[in-house]
Length: 368
Length: 242
Image (cartoon, rainbow over all chains, first blue to last red; front, side):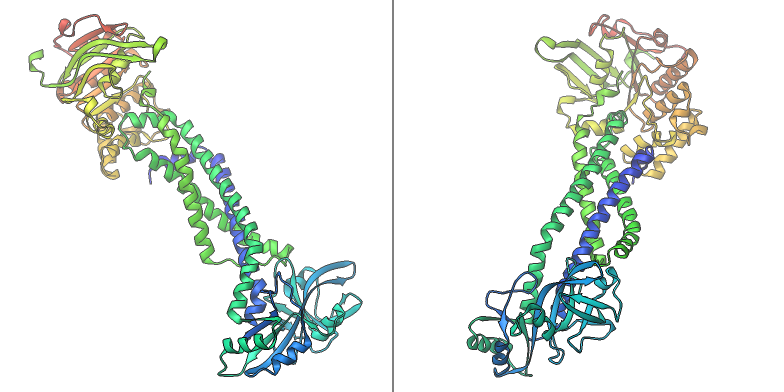
């Protein structure tokens, strides 16, 4: 590292601080988006991932439960149950529903399941217990925190009043949160007692699940059957399709802003040091010397930006989650490494952009 | 010392012209100049402002290429030098002294001198060691850790001369080195350059309109409107006392 790179940057401390601050903000923004994405990705599909079932049965053409609708009849459940190789069948009814507490109204992804069937319920209950009767509900922890629900509180859904008996985790899908009631309650809320969204099928030990899926399809031509992994992938893909374009757009804006800030600072530094650079050229600086100064400055600023960004990122996330508990984030070392690489690459691009100015600095400028 | 003692030329120009601009904006800064400068001599380019002295210096340093004629540096035509080669020549074999010193303000005095040593490929510690020794030799060692802005004009120019000769340059190009200095400081600088030419057997070319330098010069080439008004060898001065 050349002293001159550091001295150039240190000569304008306010400008350096503003630039590092700007870059740190970009890094915080991008890292936050990545963390939200990871949090949403996990929250959205954790319900599916945690319900370790062998097969998911939905209406034909329905590929997922996040952004697709599926309507099956309870009679389908009986037919599936009677299929050779099926050990158990758990019906699930999913619907978006408004939840009231006093004057507050919020939407939940209401999940009706049969507690006796063993599958389809909350992935993990961290307070209280799962529902046992039709007058009970389990709420997501972020939802409960946001609306200040506690165990024993009363929740109004349409004309019914349910008691909060449990708080679940891994059930925050960012735009909405899962809530769990009995299948009967969900069916009565929707007004169709014979309707479900899907069936979770557990096969008997030693059963070939692909053959079982084929048998169910043959028996029920109007349904589609997915193994656990395929169904999980379908939902991840669907979640990504809805969320990634937004993430990419904002991240791209962040990257462009970061590159622009850095290029601008480097260009200003070159213009301000034009005389020095001309002197160095005259004195025989090697061809790589001045470009290296620019790259060093860019990397110094980027590194400082990363450090400052990381220092402020974690407290900021905590603050955001304090204010908006439904904002689910998950930060990993891989994300930080990815972000650092992106910032490093952008700083190199910024230096290449700024370097063009070096070509227009001439040795003759130093002669009077 | 007389002219016969000079060795092969460091700089040789033959019928060199340099024209800037195009069409109606063409300006001939240097016209049909021939000169040679060898190791061990101090050559003064004397002339008023706008006479083409600086252009001739930049031609001699290989910083610009002639419009016509040939410039040979260390025995090789500058046209045949690759840009990287000329850069290496400037780093290793040519030193520069400027009217306005052109020290780099954000570097300390010692770092200014060490910088050219780094350009020449010396390691950081080695460069600093050489720089410190030179600064002490030039009686500015105590200023090594100061920034140039805190130095007097004379001190700045001493540092600039130290920088110019740090790599043992065989050719020193000095553009109005005394113009910003008081009389005594100017003499000191010229003595330093003169000593370098004589004791180290190096070539020093100075462009100036300062007549005080004449007595230190082996040859004075007078320039007016881009042309030599005295033939190269018409003004030969044998120096007896510096």
